[in-house]
Image (cartoon, rainbow, N blue to C red; front, top):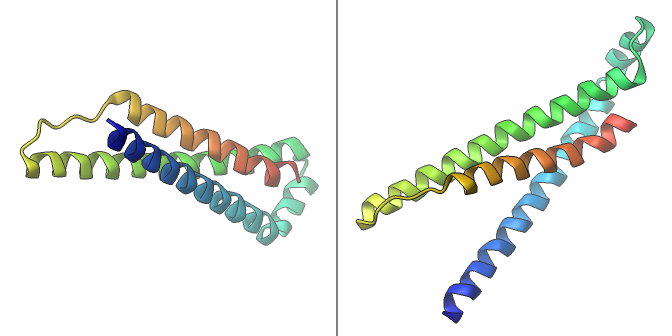
Length: 120
């Protein structure tokens, strides 16, 4: 029993580190997007876009990027799990709550990572 709980703790820790690194990557990508698109932002502002509209654009982009990455991660994880289960002769099981939890976590991290560039 102790081996299972320590193995679970190890995987949760690795998952948390991967989530943190992914969030930092999304935030970095969005900051670079803001810096590279300054002229576009200036043009939109000159044409009447508010700061909120420009910020919302970058927040939506961060959320979409995170949603696509989360969906790819969930799909890849489910595929590897199913392939391993079939190869080992186990009954394949991918809990829906885990898949939805992964997508929700990706969206949350994307929202947090997109807030800084959206507000500045």
